[in-house]
Image (cartoon, rainbow, N blue to C red; front, side, top):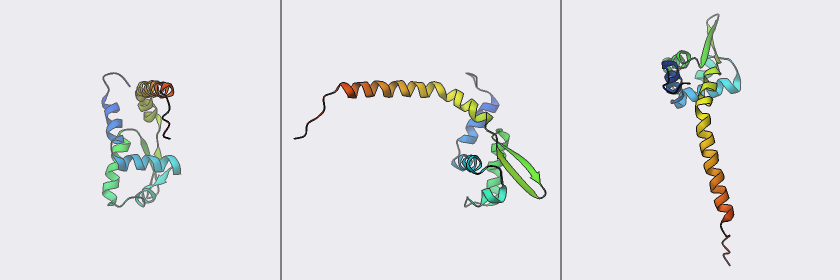
Length: 115
């Protein structure tokens, strides 16, 4: 991901901003490719609403759709998530350094003896 971001980058972040879409990705990650019916069973919403979420995920490149007869099978496409990880990496390093500093400070502090 570049410093300015692209429309594709924005679509990925917008897709990930919704808890239903994150849950769909988790279901596909844990359970592999699944038909819409199987995914819909996990949500208390009308099928057209889930279809809209799946469209957002498809447009962001996070899932692919394959037709098998009358079924639509959805599969996780993880490549855009690697780009998100690359973008997040400097922030992880920032917090790791902060927490290490906090740990060192706490190690230097005397223990309270509550006797």
